[in-house]
Length: 306
Image (cartoon, rainbow, N blue to C red; front, side, top):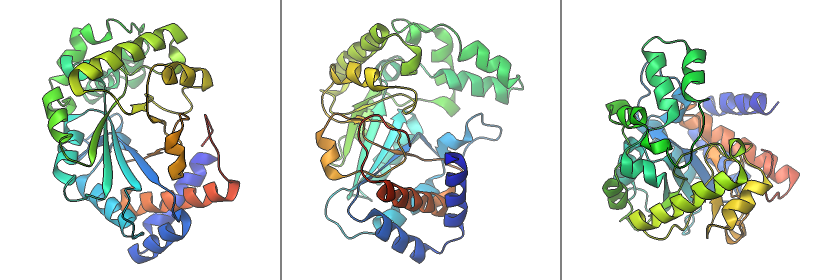
């Protein structure tokens, strides 16, 4: 049902003129805040396993301009958040922070992965599938193998895939350099990027504690935390583990805007998980439609279903 709803919103937005989209965003959002969850910026390679993770620069620029054009406001009500610390997303933030000073940019990095230049399991799947390997076989081989929160980033194959141009991670120096802009901040995304629901509470606690310490050593005290994968792959018990070990906002991927006062609490904040294939107008229509649905059902807090 939700997928069908989203598909219809994207299709409608794609056919709507930009001026009408701005008016729709203005009416639906009002004074609500919006955070976008993004991953990679550029052109997705042919045959990419997860093309939705990558948004072309021109589409993201247009989307930001559409959103900003819907409201005259001095506060930073729009947040662009980038998970995982890929080099292309960090480069985008470094090049756009001064162009869009009214936008809050958040870079959610996996500190140990950035320091060791150890890539992600799904990049191994993508590499193998693009080389002709069966998807199910590659998935089972890479994504379903045992999880070790202490040794995941010691694996040679993860360092090897991150050394390939298509999967390059930003270095700690590059992340720190991007964050020198006044409207750019860095947040913690755990060291291993495992699904919370796949870990024991003890292992999740270890990953969070170690990543917080690594983050502080590399970047300073972490002010933000984002769950890997987001909702619904964590629950209230996982929030308790994270909240006990972090300070400041905790972010998820619930598809709704939020009120300014929500940032004062420890309940997971919502972010719209952007599909890079939808284009600027399709994504803008989706955000407007989701905002209308949010207003219709009233405020929701805590761990929630989109």
